[in-house]
Image (cartoon, rainbow, N blue to C red; front, side, top):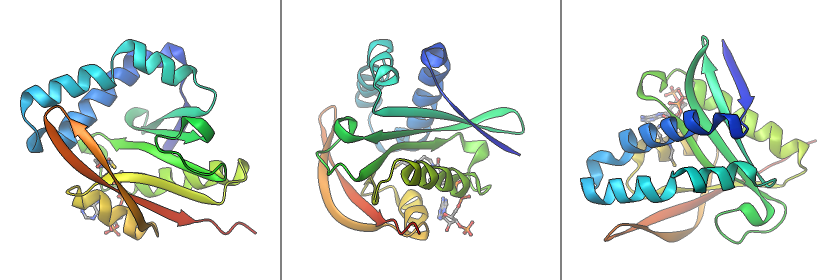
Length: 173
Ligand SMILES: CC(C)(COP(=O)(O)OP(=O)(O)OC[C@H]1O[C@@H](n2cnc3c(N)ncnc32)[C@H](O)[C@@H]1OP(=O)(O)O)[C@@H](O)C(=O)NCCC(=O)NCCS
């Protein structure tokens, strides 16, 4: 049983915890400990997350599987998008599940939820960035129907990395 709930400022501590835990679990083995710590402190400090939670053009959601916090989603529209994109685009900036909750079909359901949000918000494209070496996530996005349209650079401490930008056209009736 899956439950999705929109986060608010009261969720700051839990959001910080799951953001750090899932980012570290996903990318820890590919980065130096120092670069990882610096990034976690910069991206997920209380001030940064408070600002993001307060932005009316961003929305965080917690996903519960059998009443346990399994993962989270961050959606952006308009000027909250992490790259300059048209107004009819919706960005999935973060979609992360804890290890124990991956490959259970929850990502597919959460993606369906993102599609519903895009429909409600009358968007025509859904897009995201994925690290060039995050092959499992790329497989997932391929299955969800995304196609690569660009790329951008992403700095992790002293390491310069590339994200592929993927998008999917939405055809709502
Ligand atoms: C990527 C992620 C969101 C996918 O969610 P999920 O719940 O694990 O995915 P699902 O169980 O719904 O899988 C759907 C399909 O995606 C593909 N897929 C998912 N994970 C995969 C993996 N590790 N390797 C290969 N294919 C994978 C499969 O085709 C799968 O279909 P199948 O089960 O019929 O083979 C999740 O695995 C995750 O949180 N990963 C770590 C964090 C991350 O990389 N986030 C994305 C950052 S850009």
